[in-house]
Length: 466
Image 1 (tube, rainbow, N blue to C red):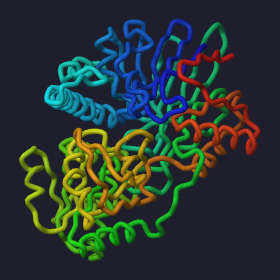
Image 2: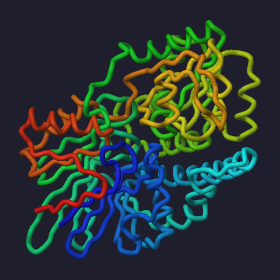
Image 3: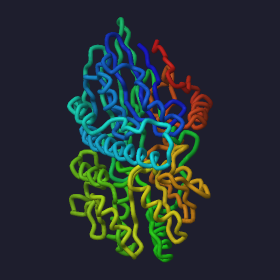
Image 4: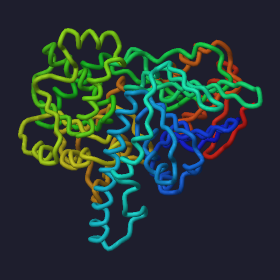
């Protein structure tokens, strides 16, 4: 029994773990690398040949967990991809959007580099296109929470992680030569008491080996006080200056969480009904998936829907699909909230809205999610005097704000609380999915506070599960 760590090791993105047990070979996640220092890994052949894999098991649909699946199929994978029903639906949208963005960005880079008379660092072709996405979609096999799935030497089931719609904690039983070991992946673990979704499920029984995320392993979430009032204040103050509020959002969960809060603010009369644009075809499609998968809702959201107060429908909300509709947003001469993807400002329509507003002192760039090191979002959040957007340097003159409390990740305290639900100390804990300092600090905290055996794997490390 072995586990090899092939991503999200001393970094946040690129989640991928290779499990060998008896005759069975599976990947847990197959994510894209999004931090600038590691982008080369997206272009390199995957460490495990696709033809050697029996299955992929997805914890959830974020691009840094599923984004290299089409490339895996390119390289010979023909197995099954297990995911919850909501994850399967979301992954289709996310992968199609990723292919579309890559094709557009590759064409744009070719034009720009030709005009500038230089070559780019990365190939000026898409990593994959929509045909590659179409090729991998038939491999998906939806699996409900708690439903046991038997592979030759592995049994697994999904528990609710409360991170995004359909997100899962993965519990595996490995069997080899008469030996049985349990292995759990936290996936990305959500916060408790967040809107729309249920809370993460407890660990429950004794676990032999545990892989836990550490995105916020070295800190607790800062508090803005009343989150909705803080959101309303940013909008009110920006509106009074005559500017726009530009919010980079992740199409999955963060956009829907904001719709939930804006819906409450307008229905309660706490915010004037000026335009709110959700400018992301993917986010619009994802919102439709949210409407379909009410089995993932918490009780409060189910009750809202029952009394016809869906958080995804209110009068001043404008869902933007086409490019022409997106361009028309800039013709409005009244303050507006513009939410667009991508959440870390690495691609997509958000770059155009940033370009139009970052030079305006009256506008506000409002961050509501984690910004990984090396991303454009991180550079803006750190208030760099100039940032590069579409090949040009732009001065940062807009107000830069950050709203806490909307994170989809459990913080240090939340992670500790969840680990505390284990019935007994694991044989070993592996801390992943965090910047190196965060992972190392969280590992040390677990050693000191719980007395557990903890390690922080490096990329490509292999560990035998004894």
